[in-house]
Length: 371
Image (spheres, rainbow, N blue to C red):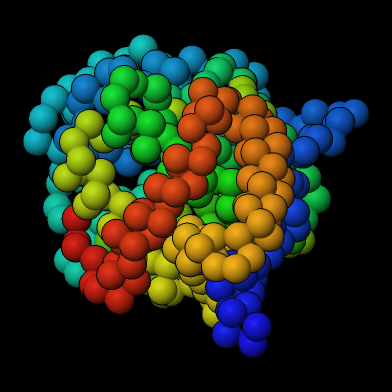
């Protein structure tokens, strides 16, 4: 047999090797993460910043969880009402009378040539009184009353950015499972790589950084023309291994209202994925290696399993799935998503379709929408 007969097995082996590299080099760090025990708990003044636009129902459902935080040190909740036309203003006014820590900012004009929520978020940050900024969305609710405490405690000496987990609320139906798995899969990547010394993004549903860093980076000036990127592009530009910390604690998670329509989910993910082209070259290279091998793994498996060396192919598949199953289960347990685990092979196959579906978003211009 000549080299051509070996090509299917070689191609499949290389994709499996790259996938195993990511699982053993990065993803295991989240799966087996053990937080450091702090002998002294710091309590710093914190400004929670939230932007809202026509989200009266979400504010009514989620804001009490933000306002009821058991944080004894100085803190405020800054809510920017961005030109809402529903009952958002009236709900916030009512909450303002009952909670002294609530600080309202009313925007009545649209920002020209600044799509998305970067302008209202910038106004909220500038209005914040404290150096530590904790960001979330109006459709998010903290997992516990200790959310602020847990997130701010990671700001030790030299730390300017803290990454948290923002999941989605559990609902029935296939779409909810896919949304939650995709959210977990994204977190698996950015939290693990941050733990591995290569932070490259965060999610605005649960993210904290210093106000001084925001000004040092000139806010969102470098990507103000894009509707997205107020979270991941900002972190991509400013994070490095010495100034970034990760909080893996179920009390510190937030949970968002998931999309209930396939079209809404598709448009949301298309916009989110479109910012990846603006990442630093090294991050794009690493993420591309993971994405490409994820797409090629199962096509190469089918190609290889029908070759002369199908026994080797099945052995490599078994090894990859074994390593993957252990790490995914541990990581899902860390993030409170273990009900997804029984279907992990289906989710893994689904990522082939997911990456293929959103491949065009890497070069097409994103829509200029707020959310």
